[in-house]
Length: 298
Ligand SMILES: Nc1nc(=O)c2c([nH]1)NC[C@@H]1CN(c3ccc(C(=O)N[C@@H](CCC(=O)O)C(=O)O)cc3)C=[N+]21
Image (cartoon, rainbow, N blue to C red):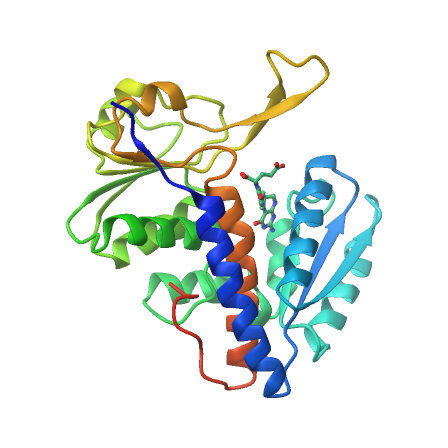
C-alpha cells in the first residue's frame, strides 16, 4: 500500500518563487515589502525558526528586520518597539515569535500590533474577519495546510474534516478555513470523548496537538488525507547526541491507511514560512492599495 507523501517542501518552494515574482513587481511599483520578527529571550527552537524565516525573507527579495529583546524585557519596552514597527513605512509584516516569557501577555502583545501588519492573523480584527468571511490576514500554518489540501483534493465541499487542536494560532483558523471551503468541520481536543472514533470519520484529518505520534494508524479512515502539524524534537534513536523531528501522527502506521499524508519534517513546516512571506506581500499590497496577487491568499 502506502499513501502519497505530500511534498510540502517542494510546494513551499513554488510559493516562495511566486512571492519573489510579486516582490519584484512591488519593488518596480516603488514598494519594497519588509517583514519584522521580534524574538524575546533565547529559546533555541525559536532561534532556529527565526533563522529560517530570515533566510527565506531575504531570498524572496524582501527586507528582513530582526529585533531581539532580552528575556526580562518590560512590556513597556516591547510595546514601544511594536509601536515603532507599526509606524515604520518599511515594515509591512510584524511577527512576535511565541511563546514569550511568562511575565508577558500574548493577548496584549498581539493587540498592540497593527492588524494591517499582523501577518500571524492573530489579532481580534483578523480572527473576526476570517470568521465572518472578510479579507483577513490568515495565520500562516493553516493557510499553508489549506493550500496543500486544495492542491491535492481540488474542491473540498462536503468533505468531513476533523481538526484535532483548538489553538488561536492554528486549530481555530484551520477550522474556519475548512468551513469556508464547505467542509463539515469538527474541532476535537484533549477533552473530546472517543477521539479515535471522531478521527475515523475524517476525510481530512488535521493533527495539531503537540504530542508526538498521538494519532495512531487505526484512527485514520482508509483513503483519508492526513495533515500533520505537530513538531516535537526528540533524541535520535540511532545517532547518539543527535535529535530529530516527529509529528503528531504515527507516520508509519497512518501511511498504510491514508491516501495521502504530510511528512515531518518536509510537510507543513516549510509551508508555514512560505505563507509568512505570502502574507507579508498581501499586507504590503493592501497597505498600498495595490492589486493582490492570485494564489497567495486563502
Ligand atoms: N507568532 C508565531 N508564529 C508562528 O508561526 C510560530 C511561532 N510564533 N512560534 C513557533 C511556531 C513554529 N513555527 C515553525 C515554522 C517553520 C517550521 C519549519 O520550517 N519546519 C521544517 C523543519 C525545521 C527544522 O529542521 O528545524 C519542517 O517541518 O520541515 C517549523 C515550525 C512557526 N511558529
